[in-house]
Image 1 (cartoon, rainbow, N blue to C red):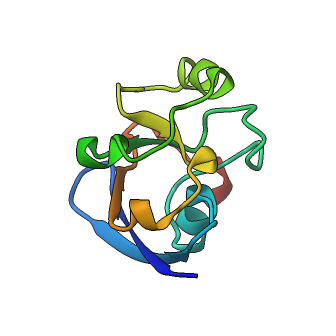
Image 2 (cartoon, rainbow, N blue to C red):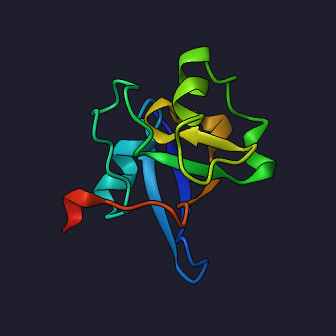
Length: 113
């Protein structure tokens, strides 16, 4: 298994957290391990959009296409953009090494309160 580097950019763009992950990890778990404000209320069951992230345009093309169910959840995400995805649905592979995602400014982690 290879190490994969992931970069999380804060909503205000002022902070970058670089995290290490393993092939097969999902992005939501790595975000939570690294204290990123992604709630993941449904625990990765794709029943909410609280793990919405904005993928850097250069990395977006390396992701598998979103399923119709994920697209439906993204329609409910505050501040969704063309490169928005649910972190619970991004399974890390060597092709995603160096992945950069931004935490949306509309993100509110109620579990962190």
